[in-house]
Amino acid sequence: MTRETWATRTGFILAAAGSAVGLGNIWRFPWMTAENGGSAFLLVYLVIVLGVGVPGLLGEFVIGRRARRNPVGALRDLSGSRTWAAVGGISAITGVALLSFYSVVGGWILRYLLVSLAGPFTGGAAYLADPGAYFGSISFGVGAAGYHLLFLALTGLIVLGGVRRGIELGTKVMMPAVLALLVGMAVWVSTQSGAGAGYDFFLTFDLETIRANFFSILGPAAGQALFTLSVGAGTMITYASYIDEDRSLPFDGSVIALLNTGVGVLAGLVVFPLLFSQGIDPGSGGPGTLFVGIAGAFGALPGGEALSILFFGVVAFAALSSSISMLEIPVAVLVDEVGWSRRRAVGTLLALIATTGTITAFQPALFGFVSGTLVDFLLTGGLLAFLLFAGWVLGRDAVAEYVTGAGPIATRLATPWLFAVGVVIPVFLTFTLLTTAG
Ligand code: PHE
Ligand code: NA
Image (cartoon, rainbow, N blue to C red; front, side, top):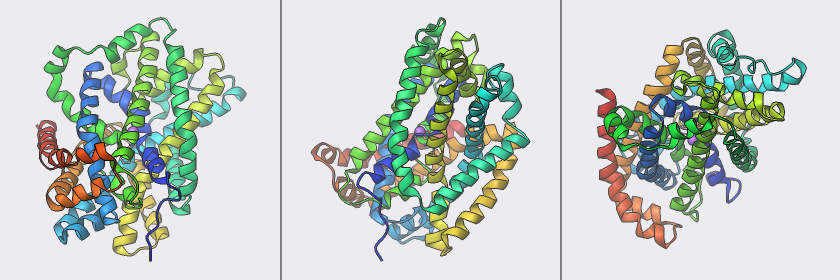
């Protein structure tokens, strides 16, 4: 039996980019940046994206394409060791943990979309009158749990229906739409009074601030860098297991990282000036930072109502193309390794995540822990394991896989990459884990 591959030549890069670009860029990034002091966080984060995220992404690609298996099967088959299989199994747990909060946030997005759609009939979208109070009233509780279930059900239907082709196509539309929307809004926002303080907060690097806060920024910045690239969870191992030999992994990885970083930085260029122009302290919003900031634009912009529908619609799509990649990890493990049918795997996992997510939707403190510290920890630890595997178990085979389909420049970088992946980055990740734990 030949293994399923992506529907089209661009299928892989679209799906992987669809996984990367999501709520991590548009919702979590502004929140984490606000909470960790603005520009200091941004700089540390960008350095980690480039120095750790991209090589790490390539590490997962190499493992996935080499093994053509889910994370458990990949680590087992390539090493012949059950211990490594168990290490791969952690990524199934990570997938469940991620979805337990991600679908709560996806639910918020769906709710804002529906409320925006209802706006014209109800005398303006409900969140416009007092964005902070509105977010506070809907973010946790019965409503949040209900919308979480809706988002989760949509995720399950897509994964079950095998409409991957639809997602690949949809991503083609979503990417330019996200970029165009954010660029347009960023330009408009720059004309608002008070926006300047937002740019100062987001962009004015001050090395002294970075130095003074380095150890507290490091863990969250690393976590966010990995989260936004969908690295450390095994997603990219799973997606890369369906790629053809002729794709250049370094090229595809660089395109994805560039796109993904662009969307995040643009989101910051929209949200922070908006917050400051409304006189809102960015550090005060927590997970509501995006929702409270962006409402200011929809209230003030000409055509803001239509724009809000477009915005939340596009973001909902971006969120779904990421959430399906989270669910796909444990599904692939159960189907390939345990021998379950796809239907049984999806059904069981949905029941599990419906439960864990509902608990999260009622507990703001738990939500904060799972979506913050726990994610940072799981992804950092997960990537550490994958890279040690690529560097020490695969070794020269990793290089061989890396250069397959790659151009001359990427090929020249293969050996330095192996050294980074086997030695430098693991040291960095271990250090980061220690600062988070301590
Ligand atoms: N990268 C996705 C985002 O930014 C989240 C994600 C993390 C998806 C890990 C899959 C695995 O929204
Ligand atoms: Na992302």
